[in-house]
Length: 156
Image (cartoon, rainbow, N blue to C red; front, side, top):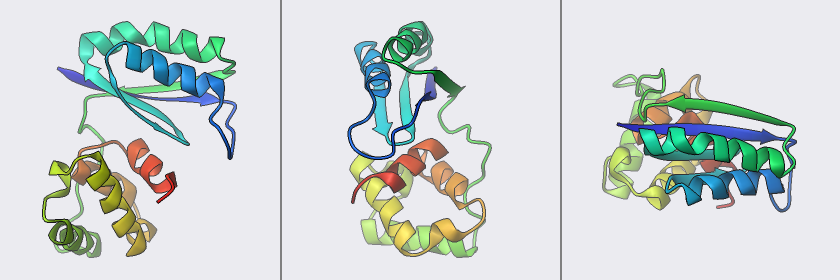
């Protein structure tokens, strides 16, 4: 079984280099063999359930030793977002289908750069102005809402 952890360490820093506590937590996840996605709102780590659960103490310690004053953690099975994909025929569904046609693949099958591009295209089309669209797009992509927010905040 695979699990995904999303963790955010504080204090936040708006611009510039990420704080040491965030970098150290991400490194600890990487050292444990987990795949990571590092962004301005936090980090997600994914991997085998045992490897992820075993790595959590090292991730927490790395963040705290790096100066974090708070660490927020969410663990889930990938794809369990408490969200349904866009309602068939809805405005969001049509936007998603257009982006899939443009990219030549279902969003779930794209690699990470492809998913980042899909999020950018959806943002350009106004998809994220729609209610609950981030959760629906995350489900369609097969990632977490947190990852979609990271993609949105990443420089194009």
